[in-house]
Length: 349
Image (tube, rainbow, N blue to C red; front, side):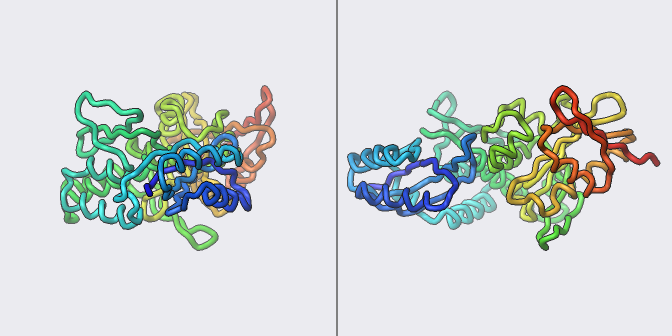
C-alpha cells in the first residue's frame, strides 16, 4: 500500500464529487484526504488535491486512467511520504510556532508548508518558487506547479516570522510593519462581517494573485480579457500600480489579514483624472466590499485633487454603474469603440 498525491480538475456542479469518489473506489483506491485549492480555470473547473491510498503503482496509474475515462481531468499523480498525511491545519499551526521561535527557519518552514524542498545554490527543480524573508531570497522546488493560493499561504507565514522576530509594541520590526502596512480602518458589511482597508504594497502581490485566482472566469474576464487563474507579471504589476506604474491599489482584507477579498486600483492619466478598476471575489460580492472600496477610492482621489475618475467596462456589465451609484457618486456613461466608458465627477472642495 502507498500514498499518492492526485490533482483533479472538476466542474463545480452537484454530483461531480460523487462521480470522483466512484471513480477512485472503482480503481481499488481509497481517498484519505481532499483539499480544494479553489482556483477556477478558464473553463470553470476547480482543482482538487486528493491523498489516495493505492495498493501499488499500477493501481495509482490505473486510477489516473479511470479518472480520464470519466471525463475528470487528472493533472498529477505522484507518490508522497506518510508524514505528509498530517492534518494541514495542525501542520500550518506547528510551522507558525516554529518560525515564531526560530525565524531563521522561515524558508525551510515555507518549503514544508508547500510540500517542497529548499534548493541549494545552483540546484534546479521542475517547478520553483522564490520566497523572500528578512531581506534574503531563497528558492523552493518540487515536481508540480505552485498555485496562487499556496503563494498566499507562504507570504502569510513569512509575514508572521518577520513580525515575531522582534516582539514588543515598541520594537523596530513592529514599527516597520506598521509603517509599511498602515490600516485605513475596518468596514462593517451588510451581513455583519468586517474587512480591513489599507493601501497595498509590493509584498502584497501573492495575496492579490490568490484573490484573482479564486475569482470565477467571468469575474476575471471583467477585469482582464484573459479569464485564466494565473496572472502574468505585468498584469499583477498593473493591479498594484496601474499601467502607468504610478498608481495606487486599495485592498480589502479579512480581519486576520490572510486573504484579500477585493481591491480598487487608481491609475493617474496625467490630466487631473485617474482610471478606477475594481475586483471583488465572487463570494464577497453584494456584501458591501465594492461599495466601501469605491467610497475610499473617491475620497483618496478627492484628497489628491483629481477632478474625475474614469472606468471602462464591457457593455453588458451594468453592475459597475450600479455599484458606483450605491457608493455615492453620480456617473455618466457612453459607448465608445464597443466599450462602456464611465465618467465619475469628483466634488471639489
